[in-house]
Length: 211
Image (cartoon, rainbow, N blue to C red; front, side, top):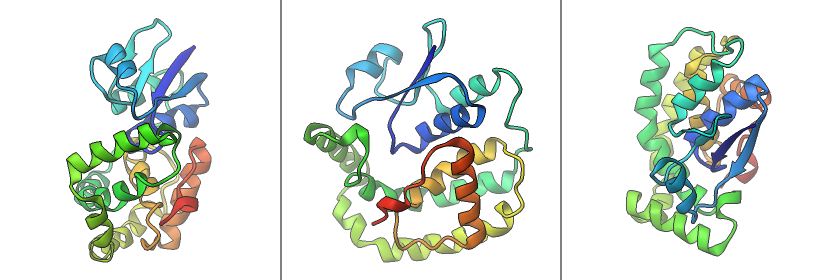
Protein backbone atom coordinates (compact mmCIF):
# COMPACT_ATOMS: atom_id res chain seq x y z
CA UNK A 1 0.00 0.00 0.00
CA UNK A 2 1.14 3.54 -0.72
CA UNK A 3 1.81 5.89 2.20
CA UNK A 4 1.57 9.68 2.39
CA UNK A 5 3.68 11.46 4.99
CA UNK A 6 2.31 14.91 5.79
CA UNK A 7 1.67 17.74 8.24
CA UNK A 8 -1.98 18.57 9.00
CA UNK A 9 -1.34 22.33 8.80
CA UNK A 10 0.72 22.43 5.61
CA UNK A 11 -1.08 23.79 2.50
CA UNK A 12 1.30 21.86 0.23
CA UNK A 13 0.48 18.65 2.08
CA UNK A 14 -3.19 19.53 1.70
CA UNK A 15 -2.76 19.35 -2.07
CA UNK A 16 -1.69 15.73 -1.77
CA UNK A 17 -4.41 14.91 0.75
CA UNK A 18 -6.98 16.39 -1.63
CA UNK A 19 -6.16 14.10 -4.52
CA UNK A 20 -6.11 11.05 -2.25
CA UNK A 21 -9.59 11.95 -1.03
CA UNK A 22 -11.00 13.04 -4.38
CA UNK A 23 -10.03 9.68 -5.89
CA UNK A 24 -10.71 7.55 -2.77
CA UNK A 25 -7.28 5.99 -3.19
CA UNK A 26 -5.97 3.29 -0.83
CA UNK A 27 -3.19 5.42 0.65
CA UNK A 28 -2.08 5.20 4.28
CA UNK A 29 -1.90 8.66 5.84
CA UNK A 30 1.01 9.23 8.24
CA UNK A 31 1.58 12.49 10.13
CA UNK A 32 5.26 13.32 10.67
CA UNK A 33 6.06 15.21 13.85
CA UNK A 34 7.45 18.70 13.23
CA UNK A 35 10.51 17.82 15.33
CA UNK A 36 11.22 14.68 13.26
CA UNK A 37 13.87 15.61 10.70
CA UNK A 38 15.27 12.09 10.44
CA UNK A 39 12.33 10.53 8.58
CA UNK A 40 12.12 12.96 5.63
CA UNK A 41 15.92 13.16 5.41
CA UNK A 42 16.05 9.38 5.13
CA UNK A 43 13.29 9.24 2.55
CA UNK A 44 14.08 12.17 0.23
CA UNK A 45 17.28 13.75 1.56
CA UNK A 46 15.72 16.91 3.01
CA UNK A 47 13.27 17.98 5.72
CA UNK A 48 10.20 18.55 3.63
CA UNK A 49 6.71 17.12 3.26
CA UNK A 50 4.51 15.86 1.70
CA UNK A 51 6.24 12.61 0.76
CA UNK A 52 4.50 9.80 -1.10
CA UNK A 53 5.87 6.31 -0.70
CA UNK A 54 4.87 4.45 -3.84
CA UNK A 55 3.98 0.77 -3.92
CA UNK A 56 7.47 -0.08 -5.19
CA UNK A 57 9.04 1.59 -2.12
CA UNK A 58 10.35 4.66 -3.97
CA UNK A 59 9.39 8.16 -2.90
CA UNK A 60 8.06 11.37 -4.45
CA UNK A 61 8.65 14.58 -2.52
CA UNK A 62 6.99 17.51 -4.33
CA UNK A 63 3.30 18.22 -3.82
CA UNK A 64 2.25 18.73 -7.44
CA UNK A 65 4.36 15.79 -8.59
CA UNK A 66 2.47 13.68 -6.05
CA UNK A 67 -0.86 15.08 -7.26
CA UNK A 68 -0.07 14.32 -10.90
CA UNK A 69 1.19 10.83 -10.09
CA UNK A 70 -1.89 9.91 -8.06
CA UNK A 71 -4.29 11.47 -10.55
CA UNK A 72 -2.69 9.27 -13.19
CA UNK A 73 -3.82 6.13 -11.38
CA UNK A 74 -7.08 5.16 -13.06
CA UNK A 75 -9.45 7.78 -14.52
CA UNK A 76 -8.32 11.35 -13.90
CA UNK A 77 -10.46 13.62 -11.71
CA UNK A 78 -8.60 16.84 -12.51
CA UNK A 79 -10.45 17.56 -15.72
CA UNK A 80 -11.18 21.31 -15.52
CA UNK A 81 -8.93 23.38 -17.80
CA UNK A 82 -6.27 25.48 -16.10
CA UNK A 83 -7.36 29.06 -15.41
CA UNK A 84 -4.50 31.60 -15.47
CA UNK A 85 -6.70 34.06 -13.60
CA UNK A 86 -6.74 31.73 -10.59
CA UNK A 87 -2.99 31.21 -10.90
CA UNK A 88 -2.53 34.97 -10.77
CA UNK A 89 -4.89 35.27 -7.78
CA UNK A 90 -2.86 32.77 -5.75
CA UNK A 91 0.40 34.51 -6.63
CA UNK A 92 -0.99 37.88 -5.50
CA UNK A 93 -2.70 36.64 -2.32
CA UNK A 94 -0.02 34.22 -1.09
CA UNK A 95 2.45 36.65 0.60
CA UNK A 96 -0.26 38.32 2.69
CA UNK A 97 -2.07 35.06 3.40
CA UNK A 98 1.12 33.53 4.81
CA UNK A 99 1.53 36.39 7.28
CA UNK A 100 -2.00 35.79 8.53
CA UNK A 101 -2.16 32.03 8.92
CA UNK A 102 1.40 31.17 9.98
CA UNK A 103 1.23 32.89 13.41
CA UNK A 104 -2.06 31.09 14.07
CA UNK A 105 -0.77 27.71 12.92
CA UNK A 106 1.98 27.87 15.56
CA UNK A 107 -0.65 28.06 18.32
CA UNK A 108 -3.25 25.74 16.78
CA UNK A 109 -4.16 22.11 17.38
CA UNK A 110 -2.33 19.95 14.82
CA UNK A 111 -1.04 16.43 15.36
CA UNK A 112 2.50 17.29 14.22
CA UNK A 113 2.94 19.93 16.94
CA UNK A 114 1.09 18.29 19.83
CA UNK A 115 4.22 17.94 21.97
CA UNK A 116 6.17 20.84 23.49
CA UNK A 117 9.31 19.84 21.57
CA UNK A 118 7.51 19.69 18.24
CA UNK A 119 5.64 22.97 18.78
CA UNK A 120 8.85 24.77 19.75
CA UNK A 121 10.65 23.35 16.70
CA UNK A 122 7.85 24.68 14.51
CA UNK A 123 7.80 28.09 16.20
CA UNK A 124 11.55 28.50 15.77
CA UNK A 125 11.40 27.47 12.12
CA UNK A 126 8.66 29.94 11.32
CA UNK A 127 10.29 32.78 13.27
CA UNK A 128 13.44 32.25 11.23
CA UNK A 129 11.35 32.65 8.09
CA UNK A 130 8.90 35.39 9.15
CA UNK A 131 10.42 37.17 12.12
CA UNK A 132 8.42 38.10 15.22
CA UNK A 133 5.18 36.10 15.02
CA UNK A 134 3.49 38.16 17.73
CA UNK A 135 4.22 41.29 15.70
CA UNK A 136 2.52 39.64 12.74
CA UNK A 137 -0.51 38.84 14.91
CA UNK A 138 -0.55 42.50 15.87
CA UNK A 139 -0.72 43.47 12.21
CA UNK A 140 -3.83 41.35 11.58
CA UNK A 141 -6.18 44.27 10.87
CA UNK A 142 -3.83 45.78 8.30
CA UNK A 143 -3.17 42.43 6.64
CA UNK A 144 -6.86 41.49 6.47
CA UNK A 145 -7.64 44.89 4.96
CA UNK A 146 -5.09 44.13 2.23
CA UNK A 147 -6.40 40.62 1.60
CA UNK A 148 -10.17 41.11 1.83
CA UNK A 149 -10.61 42.70 -1.62
CA UNK A 150 -8.86 39.71 -3.15
CA UNK A 151 -11.15 37.32 -1.30
CA UNK A 152 -14.13 39.25 -2.65
CA UNK A 153 -12.67 39.07 -6.16
CA UNK A 154 -12.89 35.27 -6.00
CA UNK A 155 -16.70 35.24 -6.17
CA UNK A 156 -17.05 35.21 -9.98
CA UNK A 157 -14.08 32.86 -10.30
CA UNK A 158 -15.40 30.04 -8.09
CA UNK A 159 -19.20 30.38 -7.85
CA UNK A 160 -19.86 28.36 -11.00
CA UNK A 161 -16.99 25.85 -10.75
CA UNK A 162 -18.65 22.45 -11.16
CA UNK A 163 -15.63 20.44 -12.30
CA UNK A 164 -12.30 20.10 -10.51
CA UNK A 165 -8.88 20.85 -11.96
CA UNK A 166 -5.34 21.59 -10.89
CA UNK A 167 -6.38 25.15 -9.96
CA UNK A 168 -8.59 23.77 -7.21
CA UNK A 169 -5.69 21.75 -5.84
CA UNK A 170 -3.61 24.91 -5.57
CA UNK A 171 -6.37 27.37 -4.56
CA UNK A 172 -8.36 25.42 -1.99
CA UNK A 173 -5.40 24.78 0.37
CA UNK A 174 -4.80 28.54 0.55
CA UNK A 175 -8.44 29.16 1.44
CA UNK A 176 -8.38 26.31 3.96
CA UNK A 177 -5.35 27.88 5.62
CA UNK A 178 -7.09 31.26 5.74
CA UNK A 179 -10.15 29.71 7.39
CA UNK A 180 -8.13 29.81 10.63
CA UNK A 181 -8.16 33.64 10.50
CA UNK A 182 -11.31 34.75 12.31
CA UNK A 183 -11.61 38.22 10.77
CA UNK A 184 -11.31 37.20 7.14
CA UNK A 185 -14.83 37.38 5.68
CA UNK A 186 -15.63 34.82 3.02
CA UNK A 187 -18.55 35.74 0.71
CA UNK A 188 -21.23 33.06 0.61
CA UNK A 189 -20.19 31.81 -2.83
CA UNK A 190 -16.58 31.44 -1.73
CA UNK A 191 -17.56 29.75 1.52
CA UNK A 192 -19.83 27.37 -0.42
CA UNK A 193 -16.91 26.51 -2.70
CA UNK A 194 -14.69 25.87 0.33
CA UNK A 195 -17.22 23.53 1.95
CA UNK A 196 -17.98 21.78 -1.34
CA UNK A 197 -14.32 20.90 -1.89
CA UNK A 198 -13.87 19.93 1.76
CA UNK A 199 -16.70 17.44 1.48
CA UNK A 200 -15.42 16.11 -1.83
CA UNK A 201 -11.87 15.47 -0.63
CA UNK A 202 -12.52 14.69 3.04
CA UNK A 203 -10.05 17.28 4.38
CA UNK A 204 -11.56 19.50 7.09
CA UNK A 205 -11.52 23.26 7.00
CA UNK A 206 -10.13 25.14 10.00
CA UNK A 207 -13.03 27.39 10.97
CA UNK A 208 -13.29 25.58 14.31
CA UNK A 209 -9.82 26.84 15.22
CA UNK A 210 -10.24 30.39 13.91
CA UNK A 211 -8.47 33.02 15.99
